[in-house]
Image (cartoon, rainbow, N blue to C red; front, top):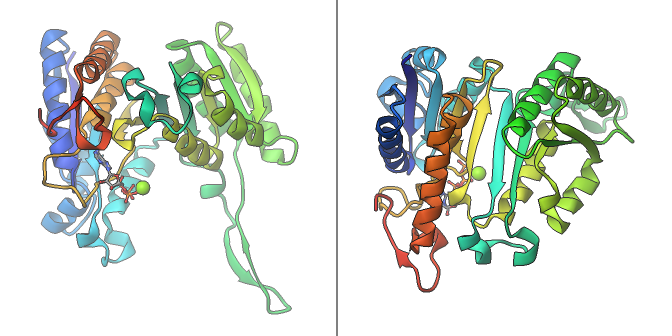
Length: 348
Ligand code: ATP
Ligand code: MG
């Protein structure tokens, strides 16, 4: 059966890095006879320039029909003065909400060749391979009511609502357990159940989900302890699952353990396992067009796409092995340059 991939190069370094990732996709497609077809569409600032919208109807329709989406990055100073509703970032948020991409997977893997780039000591991070599963379309980021109001005494107060219902917790839980099945078979659920009722429910539903996955072990940890453990002994984790805000914070902390933002892929999945894959970094306008951007985060996003949406685990493994080999050969883009290594361009 043919699988359809929608390629969205976007803005800034997006087109440069996506072009390299598509070369890799084409190579494994042929080598593993995957029967993948891909086409490109506009999103972000470049879409606004052509059509007046950062997420044209045509792009959204193609995104809904695709088995997976590969995105570069959107945005840049050129569009900073635009109205909120036509900003490039609206294109990205529009894709996330329209496709209900509630499950954000962010692996933090330390390549041994880049150990000196980590912010922690080598013995603490050597062999690090963890996956943070962050709920992306709910929690305090979206809860109602929210706002800033003026009290009777004239003082203002800001307020947000931290809310999750059972089905939202259940689906992100299943997403984490499914991912754990393909890895180390351990899930650690992060909450603040000693203070926040919403996370008492979170913990309870995670226990329910765990019963569907007897082959995966579930543990729980309070978020403050999890933050400490991430920098103290990060290798104790396999999959960490948590809500939108805790996940935002913990995944940035985890990212720093791995050295360079140019190495980090991500996946955002919906209930059917279809998803959007993109590097964790942005459009890097400061280096766009120079051919020096690191394409590995995008190439590793292709590996995630093959693993999670296209049922092609062998091809995913092959890409990850190839990335490791490139690093072994001492080839580095300038963001991960180090002594004794050869600095290469984006397309080398
Ligand atoms: P966004 O708001 O879209 O996340 P940002 O302004 O936070 O964007 P990035 O676009 O990620 O930031 O860029 C942050 C820094 O990292 C910049 O100096 C950029 O050049 C660098 N950078 C980002 N991605 C890469 C890459 N793939 N290769 C090399 N350097 C990169
Ligand atoms: Mg950023």
